[in-house]
Image 1: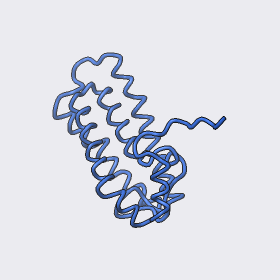
Image 2: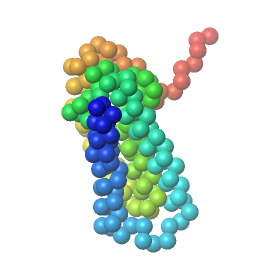
Image 3: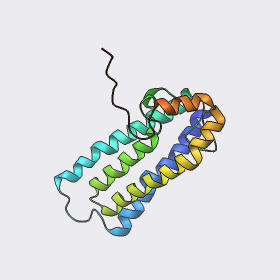
Length: 162
């Protein structure tokens, strides 16, 4: 049952953000109709990397957290393994990578602006709703995690003393 819920919410949430909306933007603006420079094909790398990040996180939510990426069906256990050891919000980072890659692939300024708008909305959602909800749900364990792991960018590796 958890696997089916994870698949459903993956298709619904990141599927809408990374497939449906970009399709509507590109088809509405006519982006991609002109010949694309070779650099546009460099967009495949962030699309593949971002999708991989997203899928890994969804798997970690299901296996370690016993939940899904949807706010209505969240993990019951705080997930601090995998990519979550390095950054607190790798799913959102993965989605931004996919969107930036699509902007390059389709040579679309509109998609690039959409990626920026998505990141701004994700930041507001994380800071205004998600983090307070995680603090209420997981208490000190989330506070300790938030002190050790940055929200968007991984920390530089620390040098050993001496």
